[in-house]
Length: 407
Figure 1: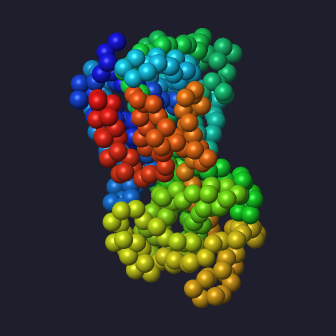
Figure 2: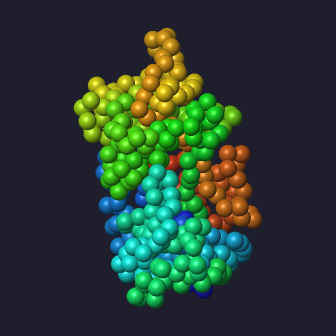
């Protein structure tokens, strides 16, 4: 075992950054990801805040660095079952999902063309359909098709396997196990949005026109379910008036007691690219406090000066439906008046929930994040493992964590 070897758990932007930095510093790197592709939540984004540039550019560069590195081994569809040992001598036991499509895949698409089964596309949060065997998304890395065994008919169908001319599909593939020994371990396990089904007052699930903020990113993305046109999911018509409800479940002792740090900047960004699609579009943002990270007050000023966007200081108390359209009730604190308005769409700014694996020796704080200063020597954590962070902060931090791993 090379003591300069490192295992990175989580293939989002933090894990990817740490992997390429560690490899270029001479480490052997094992990059573990539970999904069939790298990129995490960033791969689903439409634009980065505050520059409003597409994340695919940065991801593509990093994927090339990974592809060209002999020191990085990417293991997707894998989860850590057990971690033991001490600094310089860790043993990690992995559970591997069946590899129905192997590295011989050429992404020709013949398998998907003959597949008779369609299912909701999880990459688009169920807002579109795809085949049971398909690319996870157009820039997915590893660049190969993925078979969803929850909906695939497998042996009773076999059409994809018969159509493949490269022996890349094996419908009899079984789960596997693997042990890896490394000198250090880095957690970059990412986050998920808070479950809006807990927010009964916002009528979640009663209308497809009530979305959360990560779904809005997919709606605005050129490779999303509507090719970047912001349309109402209910009827496919253009949305002209959208409300953004800030702190949907956040800063609330009944849900998430903490501020997730990125929700305000995400909604400001989304309001900008929504209003840029048509001069007639209007966006209302209902907020408690508007918080932007770092020195981004100029972006907030840009929003404040946008005549198509209205900032309303006041928490939305309820989202109901009137003739199928969402209606918001709130109080405008600055004017002292009650508001009841109808919208084409409502976007709930749900908070960041950490995805920390339940492993022995990993102590969590009351909010579910890894407890600061509780990791043993040889273990490090980045991204949203300790607290919510934006992309820029996660990338900067990951580079520093590699130095810790080397030491």
